[in-house]
Amino acid sequence: MSDPSTVDANLRQRPVLAVTCGEPAGIGPEVSIKAAWQLRAEINSVLIGDAAFLAMIAAEIDPQIRLVALSQQALRNNGLPQFPQDRIAVIDCALDAHVKPGLLDARNGRAMLRMLDIAIDGAQQKIFDGMVTAPLQKSTINDAGVPFTGHTEYLAEQSATAQVVMMLATDRVTPPLRVALATTHLPLKDVAAAINFDSLSRTIDILHADLQNKFGLKQPRILVTGLNPHAGEGGYLGREEIDVIIPALQAAKARGIAVSGPYPADTLFQQKYLADADCVLAMYHDQGLPVLKYASFGHGINITLGLPFIRTSVDHGTALDLAAAGLGRADHGSMIAALNAAAQMVRATVRWAD
Image (cartoon, rainbow, N blue to C red):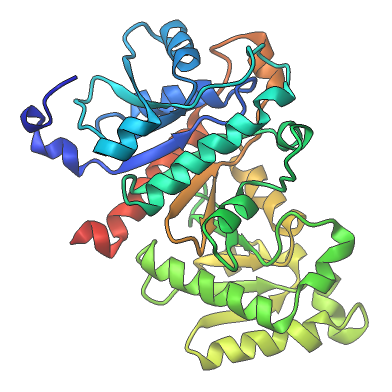
């Protein structure tokens, strides 16, 4: 290990991002290692996962990749050492069962949560400037006996955040497209009941604040979809627009937020509307995300707004079939985008600027 005093001071200007490697039987470990290594000159990525397992994968990907294992205890006692750019730090989080690529094993479910806990704790302790998550398999965690809905909800719970907002984004189209959600992982039958004046107002406030504070947009412009087809068509196709969405938008405008709508979701995603917008707020998961994923799948990112730390993620799943077929088939473009976006957000924060 190098003496921290001998490390070039410029290295300290690299944002330090925790990268949880996700479902070990999927492509998460591969894309995490590839992206961390490719961006090592600009970003100090700290991988969180089973150190021996990650070292084995790294050696198969590229023998030049150098990983340095750290224990959780060393991290707590001494903080994160400064390493030169020719090596990547790994915080060791041991798995509980041998990994067979492409095959899920519930015995490793709790290890994935331990990875997240390490990243959350480090971000809250300011050891990390932010965190980036590789995909995990929800069923593995649930099969391990732990109720788990998704990254977004878990991060909110563990950080004691009352409400968060899920947003996906891509710069693969012009202008860049951002789509936030008023509700996240809910059955469709429960969506309408989950949208009320208070929750929608808080969502708008969180979205507005983070677009300002983490994206550097002085007066973000937000377009909001309706819930029903044709945005309710004046009440003939539902009253949620009249009773909930319009009043929430009017109240947001009174608070100085540049928000407009509700617009029919089937016609909103056109250049003539999006050209003058910084973000679209959709009412539910499959209303807004298919458009974005069609435009950028494999190169988009997931961002959790409202947390007390920065969190981005890839826009794809564990791809167990690719993992089973062997290393070298997974595209790490989305992880590259997630790391770059988190680093840009870090640099936009007041703490970084200070």
